[in-house]
Length: 193
Image (cartoon, rainbow, N blue to C red):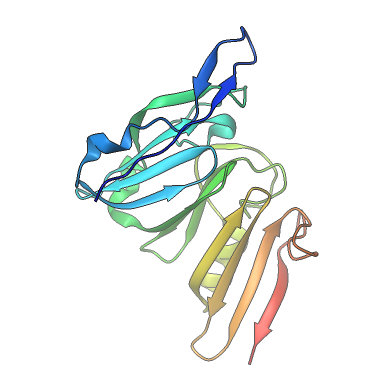
C-alpha cells in the first residue's frame, strides 16, 4: 500500500505566499495504515495502531486539534494525531471540507467543525472545536433505532437508521440536494417498508 496526495498551490490571503493544500506526507506512513479518508481540504489516515492522523486546511476547527484557522488557506502540513481520547471507540468517520462526523462503539454520532447550517445535528448552529454529541440523531438511537450508515457533505449530514425491518433516513443541514436537508430541524427524507 502506498498513499500519495497531490497538492495544489493556492495564494495565501495575507501576504501572497503559496501553501500546498494536501501535501504528500502520507508516504511516511509506509504500510502502517488501514484506512484513508479524503475531502478536498483534508486528509485523515487511520494507522494500524488505531490512531488517526490528519493534515490539511483547518478552518472551522475540523482538523480536531481544537484550533480554528480563520483563513481558508491556513493549513496544517504536518500530520498530527486526532481523536486520541476516543480512538479505540471509533467505528466510522466521515469528513467534508467543513465538518467531521464520528460513529462510536456506543452507537452514537459525534461531530466537530462547521455547524452554521446545523449540519452536526446537535440543536444549534455553533462551530465546534471538539467532538460533541449529535443529539438529534442520537435521540433516534435512544428510541430503539440503530445507525446503519451515514454520509455527509459540506452543508449537511444524512443518517440511515434501521430497526431490523424498516430503514429510515434523516438529515440535518442546509436545504441542499432537492430539499433533503433542512436547516435547523431534523427531517425524514426517505422511508422503506
